Image 1 (cartoon, one colour):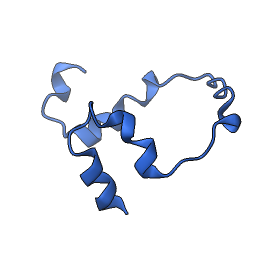
Image 2 (cartoon, helix red, strand yellow):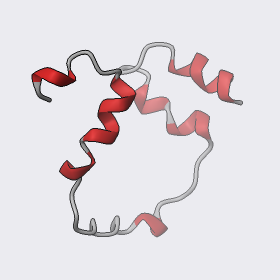
Image 3 (cartoon, one colour):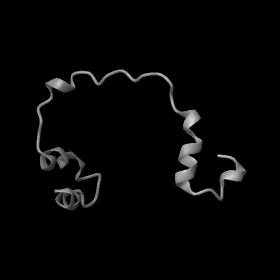
Image 4 (tube, rainbow, N blue to C red):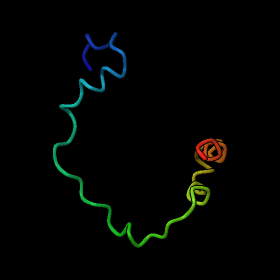
Length: 62
């Protein structure tokens, strides 16, 4: 970001930095198809110690 961008809204800055995006393709995620599907409630259990109110967030999106 340069000095002229300080007064720009954040959403406008996102469009200005598109030239900094990586051009190559990312490799595929390995072995994801062998991972069992679980409910959203089960998936967020490991996050409960990291993200406050994650259970409330799950209830909100349901």
